[in-house]
Length: 386
Ligand SMILES: Nc1nc2c(ncn2[C@@H]2O[C@H](COP(=O)(O)OP(=O)(O)OP(=O)(O)O)[C@@H](O)[C@H]2O)c(=O)[nH]1
Ligand SMILES: [Mg+2]
Image (cartoon, rainbow, N blue to C red; front, top):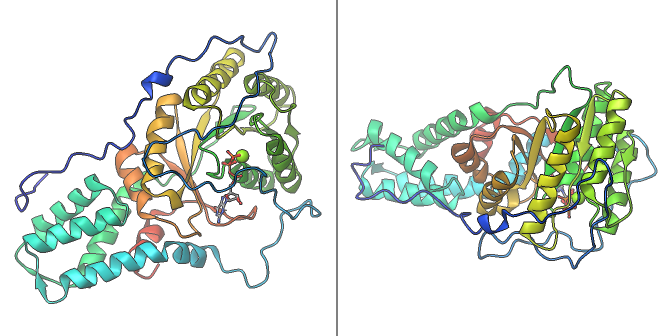
């Protein structure tokens, strides 16, 4: 990395190197498959505290159960609801204006000198692109333009291109294994990230493609979780397999896979708890689910999707780190990009983890999930015409 304009590279962001190893000893628990045993219900507690700043609690009990239940089909977008790209832009607007105003402030009538590069690097970090990406972009800009006059517009375009280049390799739809009956998708993430909502949206998309879909209500920890998922199942038009609160999630997942195989379903979506008593318990539970699924079919789960809430900014990076250590995360879904999103984090995620981003959430209704498009996203984020 060319950094002739700077003394010392900043260390790579290592936000989430906290004590995951301590959680690496799942408790010995009887495995389902033969005889699933209910696990004791315990006191709920916040699960992941990867950063000192506590994560905003989107919804403690009671669970926000979506209100539109009467309609079995997808609720139509309310009249006057903006298109998804407009909502994405609106969601990103804070990040966008921070970037465009910042770049405008730094580069007006200015030669690209050391100070300007320092300021740009700082700006990119505050826009959630992460230190590594910020250093990379400024380094590349320095390489081609150092000592020359640059306009804000030029810098924005340069930035948009670098962002698009970083995002393009990860913008991949989820491919189902054609021969799999079912293709098993395990959905993980912290509480409130949008797992259950995402499952509802995915179920609807697969149903619309004529696929047979089953949903397993693997969040057996909270009473309202099953109910919430049943509402989504009803909307998407597919069965939800559930058990009583406190039941063994792995046992439920095993049974759900058995049924999905018997019924030759195309897709089995497995919801999971976002919070348990602590990180060790969550890790033990997720690993047990995976182990038990593999007993029945070693190729499962075919996909393990981590759902991340874009409004949590850098916290999303810590979560990715932690969950990657717990399970073999194969891809990401990034939600709430319509909210006051900190969209830059997607760039940091792509740069650091290189995990496919299969889709983005741009709203709370069943239709509000879109494929992730690198170019459109980069242009929206940098305030260029999409
Ligand atoms: N604006 C917006 N809200 C979303 C999106 N996805 C989910 N939400 C909202 O985020 C909140 C939490 O979503 P859930 O799907 O319940 O999250 P979860 O990960 O299942 O949470 P737990 O079950 O507590 O672990 C709900 O109010 C959703 O409506 C999105 O893309 N945009
Ligand atoms: Mg949930």
